[in-house]
Image (tube, rainbow, N blue to C red):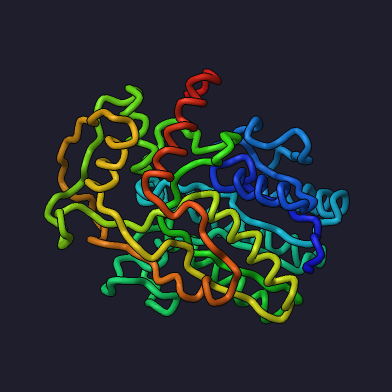
Length: 334
């Protein structure tokens, strides 16, 4: 059995980070959180989890956290996540993601923290010309968001060769859903993720859903994406950490998806089914850089980790997202 080492979660008050905190805490790992609360929420972190409000580029603060918590592993989620914003303000993204990640890695090396899990993205692949994306598919990002993540992957690879640190870069596809127990979910106002937008529309928080492009080379003409439940994604992080601890000389890079895709119209149909009402849909022109289809080949993660998704069902993902959206309304936060 893998030793459960103390873990620091950066961005642990955000959407995916807060689910990782729950997965670690539920499994008995000692866990602490650092988050600057620019986009995260203090209430998303359980009161039982030590919380530090601060920035991952604050190296004296990180040194204090590592000492106080005995940190031996980092799960790194902190950073901005809106692709169009990265195009409009690239320097912000290279600062928030690349420069601050470099500071975090430097602090980890200085403190002798030996393991890091990095929240990477399928956006590093750009617009692939294959039906299913493997980890060997060329990484040709088309926006600063994807490029900033790729640069951090390269930094980790270089550092792992030079220092006693191993890492796992998990390349997410489209993350959706919420904690099945209703403890956390996607809470950011003005979110752009399709399922979040669609359940907001179903509950009357938006008047309609825009569909960007109807002439893609897909069965119904709308873009196809691989949606993964955030709780299954969080479970993959815990298993990846166990793998790093078990083999400290090995680093890993793995896609995180279910290996099948749904079109925009199929997702909206699922929301209609779950809510028993029809969302108003408005067709809009394509957005620059959106691939026709982006689906993972998840063979590597399934071969490497004992990862068995529990929520690989579109209606279940939508149902959990909808339940969380209603909960936000009850809490006066949505």
